Amino acid sequence: MVGQPLQSAASFNQIFTPPLKFTVVSVEEIIANDYRMDASFYGTEGRLVRRDLEKCKWDTVNLKDFVRDTFYLNRFRRIYVDKGKGIPFILPSQITELYPRAVKFISAATDTDIESTRVKKGHVLLTCSGTIGVASYVSRALHNQSLSHDVIRIEAGEYSGYVYAYLKSKTGRLLVETNNYGSVVSHIEPEHLNNIPIPDPPSVLKQEIHNLIESSFNLRDESNELMDEAQTLLKDALQLPGIEKLHAQANQFDNKAGVLNYSVPSDRLDYRLDASYHVPVVQLIEQCLHKNAKEVTSIGDTRISRSVILPGRFKKVYIREEHGVPFFGGKSIYELDPGSKKYLSLVHHADRIKTQLILRENMTLITRSGTVGKVAIVPEHWESWTANEHIIRVVPAHDDIAGYMYAWLSSDYACPLITRFTYGAVIDEIDGKQVSQIAIPLLEDADVQKTINDKVLKANSKRVEAWDLEQQALNILDEKVVSAQ
Image (cartoon, rainbow, N blue to C red; front, side, top):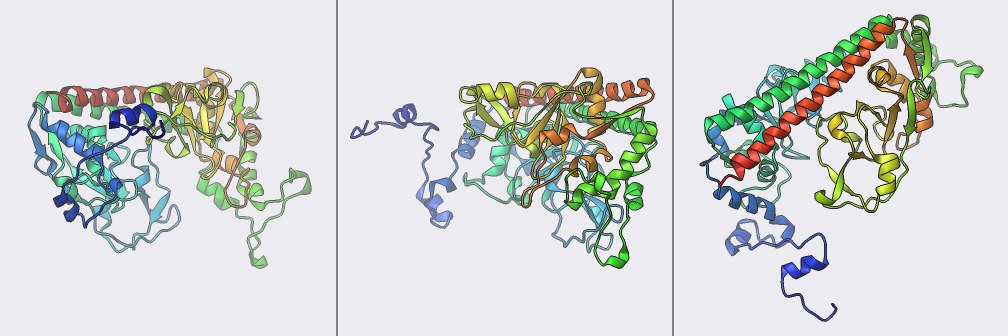
């Protein structure tokens, strides 16, 4: 093709992928944007979405006319304190998690109105800096939790579920990510949202979408409650004291030495000379397990798992959605619908997908690098999706142990048993062999163990139902609202 000029964008697309994107920008728009001439500044997607909304059969109004209020907090300096000494503080990156639990705690002495930081049931949340435009909905899991000023609160009124679904949809996300001219933004203010167009269909459609979203989040809350019940049964069966109490009891340091220290007998070194492997709380947890469990075995026991899979590193080939398989990383495993999905080429990675990367229902996933020890159970709707090599897969021996294994590995007591294996001077790592060595107790009362297992699996099935309902809401929004002409 050298020397033969392309006649159109279409012929360009026949040769190159991804396809050429182009738009027409007026002189007035360039002047209004300080004479920016770089094409990346003028996004095409936002323009196309606004053009399509003009064809919508329903009236389109501005978001400010559809909701009661859109606001965020004034910035304030946070004073972080240890867990148990402050107010739980949910980070913007956590608002889409199935069961957000605070990892940061702020002091009551922080110079702000703490009550104003709390969100209420029915609020729609939107991240406004960093990764902008990520939407969430406040149900029981987030109700009354304190959040930062980096999250915009939207009081949407009676159709809050509809507003959430719209902002969650591809259309809403693109409109948030681009300003009125289509230029991509890295930070948004509440006033930027005011003029975002939103279709105003008949009440029956808005109510239908709202009800589906409400039901979806109610199922997530019910799932979380079942998970909590399973954890309580496990703790009671093993007669485990609170994890904070165990950490306090494990404070075996000699204050006279001037540095944190503890002694380890040579027969317990396991060829590990890093102090973090021998943290005293691990020994206390193991003592409790041996005292109150019927048996303490390991994850690698064939009664517990069929295999522990650690995928190898590889160069990834991403492709369009219709030709690939969803692919996500450890950052997203706490979410119902892992965000920022990429699509892995089935042609280039077929063998690796089949043997290492593919996910199966009720697998337990454990992050192995970076943030070590995040644990999730694979719901049915992730079946045949893929996750990256930074996640270890534990394939349960059978469904009668799958839920129990997850309940244990996701508990506060298993966390130190996982993270003790961490190695690496710069990036923390664990491997599949070490995961196989993690201790897991089997209970004296087989009926209690079965109840724990069944509660976890029931909770996991509720998450699938929740996902199905949200997808129904998004499909109705797309087909009967946004695309209706």
